[in-house]
Structures are given as structure tokens and as C-alpha cells.
Length: 588
Figure 1 (cartoon, rainbow, N blue to C red):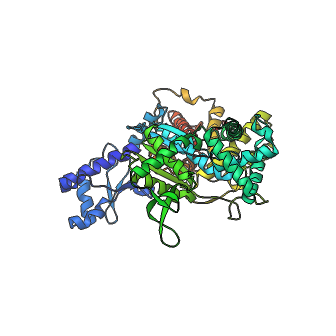
Figure 2 (figure 1 turned 60 degrees about the vertical axis):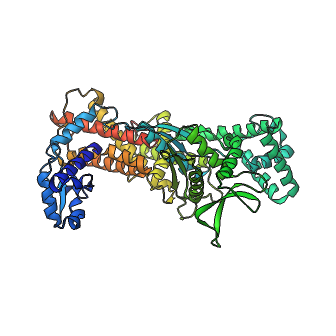
């Protein structure tokens, strides 16, 4: 349908030129999806926008366009409505041809990008020696979804996990462990992640209260940066301990990442400072080396600088991010770099993007994109925390979702008096629980905060993962009931659209390419969620015995035609859910 819309735009532009002259070549016909299906499928609003320029009434302009418009290949005769809207209704025969074409295509008619790009997606990014918490949920699954969609479109995607694995906190932690648990610095797996986090908190408290300890910790950082063998060994053990725990979470979420932590860029930081100095951007301010920014001021209204090197000679996040950006452009050959972090970091990204651009490090063909997201809130509308007031561990959150999904499933099986093996119950509970968490997040506009509710996200009704999974499983149930293999319906079968619910479902099936293109451009996964939810509703209306059609009981050739619609719906749901990082279930 995306291709259809583009072709209709081209036809409208040709009609504009024919009707009003070459100066109207390239004028946007303002073609949009019709808000009300009874008016058609598309609506061109260009006549209203040209009224002043042409000195004519919009209806007269619309009539002149329609007179020169040839869309007979796609549409019924165009109609003019209201003050000058041009309504276009797709022909049933055209829809049937399109569905017949995508039925035989593993990509459902969605072409790959004509000019694939090298794209970097920077997401998740937990800190070593800390457990992943609910705050890492959004970055991880939004970033994974964006990467999946870009990969599907044929782009060369580098998924990067910019973990916090360097800096003062390691001097602090290693110094503390030397005193209280030296074995952890020499022996693998001496600590579990919970103990490591606990020691980190104690080390932080000691660091804040004890100046002598602070000095020791800073000396340990110097040793780490200098590559002292014992300190480096200890650092590697701590990183590996955290990395194993992170991988448990990534395996649960089915997320693939390439780790490239802050430490990777540490050797490149002096060069960043030197090059900024050479470019004339770097100035000294209160002993620190900074770059002053346009459009940023402090509370007193004074220009706000970005600190690149601290007064003690140390570096900070901005320096590392500048080094990472340069590496990604120069070495990774990135054409678009996408950073998925919470909206609280928006200023930070705007600032170091500005510095990089001023320094001439960002070529015209490279796009820098910050993808911000809001907070996860509890049902009280406040930041999501445990009853004790602690940040919720991501592992606990996911485990709880699976437990609740299992409880719901077991209750339903008991009601239906349906015995199922343990293997089935465990698998369905895991898929539904994890998928419910993912979908509840992705279905929100990422720029907004959202309220986390297990009850809502596990509901079999409404815009939830269980609803989508059930729609897919329902279609597989049709296959089982009729003893049908959807892949063996035949090569020469034809889609025939007669009932209004068939037409509505067909038109929606053909909009997937448009939706994926929109998500690729806007980086808003909720657009895909909305599409899948509406598609599921359209299918349920189609299959409803009261307002829909019979499928298995229908006479040929309608029976096979309707089975094709069922199969196309299932394949579209499966593809769409896969792009969200959600697997399907054959039975629930």
C-alpha cells in the first residue's frame, strides 16, 4: 500500500501539471488515508491549499485536477466532497491482485531499502558492578525493536552496548574489596552479583565519608589507567561477573548486543582534547578545559560550558561520548548513529552533538539521533520502586511477569478442564509473561511516561501482547481444526473479496509496508503496535460468526480465498511481533 500511495501521489502530481502548468511540478498533493472508510481509502487535500495562489474556489480546482487524473488502474472514479476534497476508493480487483502477489512473497511484499545504510544503534548500556533495573528496560527493548526493523529493511546495523566499565567507581570498589574481600579480586566467581552490588554500596558510602579512603581509591584509578597488572586483573574479574548477569537478562529478552564499553575509548580521550584545542573550541575555565555552547545557560543566565577535561586532568562522560562518536564515524563508517536513552539525558546529547558538529567531526552524510523515552511509573503515578523504596531489579520484574502469566494460564486451563503437560505450561507462561512486559512498553509513545501494571499487560483483551498472541493462535486453531497446511493451499489460488469484513481486512493487511517505513523514519515502535492491534480487531470481525464470514464451512473458491486471508493475517502478525522482539505461540 505504501507503493500504491506513492503511485497515487505521482498520478496526482501529473494531473496538477497538466491542469495548471509546469510550475506546479513537485507540489505535494497532500494525500492522506481517509479518516472515514465510507468516503474511500485516500483523500487528496491539495485543492484547498492552492485556492489563494490560483485565485479559484477549491472545488473548481479539485474538478480541474480530477478531469486530468488517470487512476483507473487503482481506483474507482474519483469523487469530490465538501469544499474540495478528492476522495479515492481502491478497486476490489486491485486489492485482490495485490494480496495474490504478497501471498507468494516471504517478505509480504515489503521491499528492502533501495540505499541501505550503515547504522549504529546504541542501547541498553548498564553499569558494571550494578544490577540492571527497571530503568534499563525501556532502552533495551526499544533499542532492540529499532535495530530489528532497520535490519529487516536491509540496513547494516551495529548494535552497541556502551556499558559503564571505567572510571572512579572501580578505584573505589577495588580499594574496598582489597580490605574486606580480597579473594574477589583474584578469583573468578568469588562473588555473585547481589553481593557485588552490596559491596559497591558500602564502598560508595565509605568514599563519601572517608578522605583517606578517597585518596586510596583515586590512586587505584591511576593504577588501573596505567595498566597495573593486579588492578587490571581485578577489574576484568568484576566486569566478567557483571557481564554474566547481564547476559541472563538479554537471553530472557532475546536481545543481541555487541559490548563496547567506556574503557574501549579510554586511549582515544587525549586526542579528543588535543583536536578540540587545535580547532580553537577549547578554553580554560576554572582550571577545567571546556567548550562553550550556543543556547545553553546556567541558572544565572551565563553561558554553560561542556567540560571535556576536569581540573584534575580526568575525563568525563562527554569526553568518552565524543571519542565514541568519532570512532563510529571514522572506523565503523556509520551513516546514522541512534542513541536510545531516557529523556533526562536530552541536554547532554544536544550538547555533545553540538560540539562534534562545531569541530567538523560530523560529515553531511552522517545523521545523529537521540531517541529519548519517558519513565516507568508505578500504579500510584510515581517512579516505579519496590515497597522498600528501592529501584526494581529487572530480573525480579521479568520473573514476576512469568509467575503471574503462569497463574493466569493455570486458572484458565482449570476452567476449561483442559489438561496440558508441564512443558507447555512453562513455555506459554514464559512467552506470555516476557512478551506482555515488552509489548506494554513498546505500545506506549516512547516519549511519554507510562504506568506499569501486570494486570493490564496480561489481559487477554485490549491492546496487549496476550491479545496479539491469541489472535495468531486462533488462526493456527483454524488450521488444526480443518486439517489444513497453509503453505499448501496451491500456487494458482485467488483471493476473492466479497464481504465488507474481507475488504476491511484486506486493506489493512496491505498497510504493513507503510507502517514499517514510518517506524523506520520516526523511530516510534508504538506505531507498529497500533497497527497489529487494529489488524487483530479486523481479523476478529472478519471471523466473527455474527458480523463476519464462514471460513471452513464456505464453498469453494471462497473457502480457499478466506484461508489465504487467515494465513496472510497470521504471517503479518508473526512478522510484526518478531520486529517487536516477541515470538508467537501455536497454542495458548
